[in-house]
Length: 206
Image (cartoon, rainbow, N blue to C red; front, side, top):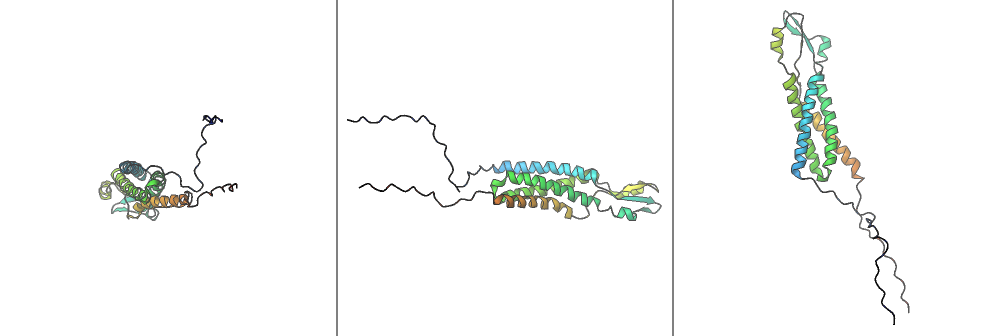
């Protein structure tokens, strides 16, 4: 009479489970909406303050030469009249590309909504940057011309001559989102419906 085989624990640990080929990777949990919005607002708010200070510090300003009839710009100074516009555009574009890339990558689980969050944050950064720069460096020209003496040089006020430079923040953030989305779309694993082939069963024994 045969004795029943006693169940013994395997001396080897359980084999690690492998993800089937072609199966989608587990998705990361999405961040809470409130945290995503607050972090984006704070980042672009701080960036706007720093960019506004940099705009005020590094913008080339045209110089008015004062004479008995008032102030006038020479030919060389006329080429610098749009210096603040170019500086604002360059600073805003670079800041929006860098911050937009980091935030879009961080918020990528939100899908298309992450683009909206980053772009709206960039618009906030543009407004804050302009406001801080105007607060620090915009001095009305007429009172300074009246107070100056003939021969003095009076700097032109810091200002934007058109609102086009403000769009550099939006363009930079949108471009960063588009590039990252295009480069990571192909990298995502693609789920397939194919199943692993079943092993052939042994032929019945007659």
